[in-house]
Image (tube, rainbow, N blue to C red; front, side, top):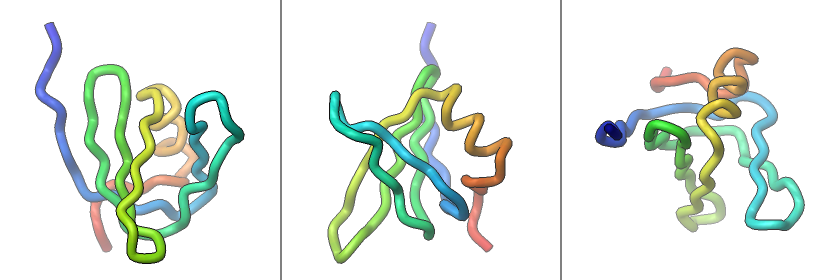
Length: 76
């Protein structure tokens, strides 16, 4: 059984990267974002140069970023 995705405020405060398809690792800039959490992945949404961008990362990788302090949940 899958749960309903949960959306929450987050901040990127350290190095966070994602891979777009089979391409290279891309960096998500530091700053505010939204995190939409599902059972096995997290979609991060942020604004860069006036454009809304998104990246999906595996939940295990998101948890690693939380533990390292690169992503902080909530807003200051």
